Image (cartoon, rainbow, N blue to C red):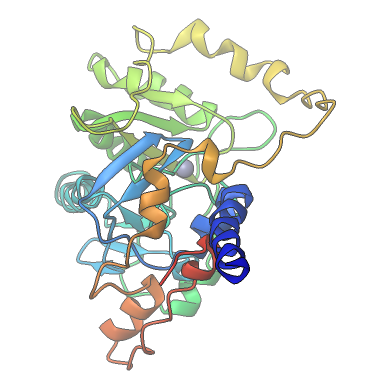
Length: 318
Ligand SMILES: [Zn+2]
């Protein structure tokens, strides 16, 4: 009886430990997507993703960067959006191809480094550096730096780096009905405002934000009926003129006052309940990490599929 109770206590203790573990450690350890129907769960900055799919490392008009991070996962709607944008921008905007940065982790969720959002498979970062006309090696995809198009000080775009094609690419992304918002550095928003002419409806989706001077961030809307939470729509108007004054003042760049107590890390219990199911699900058969997919596409034998490292972390029972 005692032995039975001990075993019972152990079984109960494991999931409890996982519950208290920072959620970014749990989701950061998941190398492959959950075998579940694709769904965004929760909010962009407090959620996860069921049934993620990978953007292939290469397409005719895109290349995935920083493959070692294994973050080019998203909902099928996001992968489809990126493939459409890559094709159409190459055909019509003079933008040769997309260098795609972080999307989501295989199961979404909070990350160990960078990004408050990118958790539900609906966000993607696209470099403001055009794709070169050759396939980059795995090493180059780790090492090459994107070129910032905005000056750190006055926050204006570098006119020798910015081209009208940059503007056309962002406009095309904003015109896509699936897109909810696009985040860019304030100087880029200003430049777009100055060059947009009379066609301005799309500008409202382009929001000025910190960083975002070497990439822009595309956020898709929470699809109707999906278990995600929509963001308030962007304010009416094009967001140009006086609306931008704040971003060109000292105010947004003042160091934030230190909180008395640092916020405790987000745990699994802080995320929607369905995120636990996402973590516990088996890996989708036939999927590989971005690095393995890239190696396989180059004819190199991909290493055998890794053992499921998150079982240990979440205390899944066999
Ligand atoms: Zn981003």
